[in-house]
Length: 315
Ligand code: UDP
Ligand code: MG
Image (cartoon, rainbow, N blue to C red):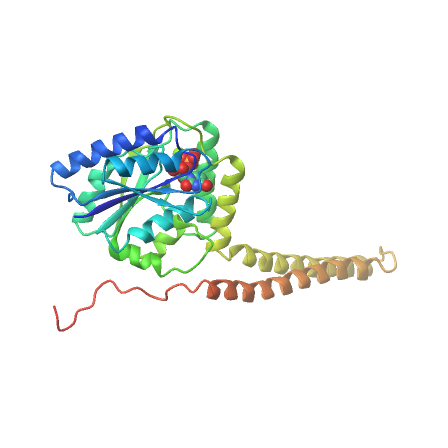
């Protein structure tokens, strides 16, 4: 089996030497065990780094053909860099594994991923069994994020980041998704095919610092929700209906007060119309939003279906 490993790198000069030697060791042992073919490759994607990352990748490629490099014209962000790598190698490999350059995701899970691939799974998600090594802050924000995604109706694998194996046909499926706002961990479940998970312990970043500060994490979470869910629009509709109900409540209340002889002139009509108008406006925005949501989903040109098997004359 021809396995390609795709590793996006942004300003990773501090980790690359260590990462490449650990990965090489892993690949050499996998090749000698016969688990993967000798034509397997490790592909580093340089995401417009400002440091020596690309020079390092060039040196690695020169010294050993096991390593390959792809250089993006500028920094396009983790998700785009990852997709660029996967789409570039898609036609050559039987399966590709994506992983971060800092090796926070245990590379020993690769063995199990390959076993699952050989059992016939097309997508194998790497799932973190614990986050003990993460800071309290990162752990709570990340887990809150997974829960929020679920509440918003986005189908994601809990505690799975972008460490996963995808078979060639799963990659071809992914290539049918033409959207430019990428949130890969929400898109891969949409592809379908047989999938499973393997668990591992997430480690610490051994050098360099996180390229995902809070600001980027929040932007990423927002991207995930707005590119996969139109639930926020539906919430506006629901709010509109609720507020309209309040106005009816107000109407009944003020009528009761009127017949009991308590009301000030003009108060009832004012109060009721404020709530009624507010409710109707929100409802109207929600209805318009519903259509915009439809246009939004249409404009992504997602595949309507992917075929996994076809029993015809040839089989
Ligand atoms: N990364 C990238 N482009 C960016 C930011 C990050 O390619 O603009 C890469 C980075 O080099 C690393 C991976 O994405 O391989 C994950 O980043 P990091 O480990 O800093 O994130 P964390 O583990 O802290 O969430
Ligand atoms: Mg990391």
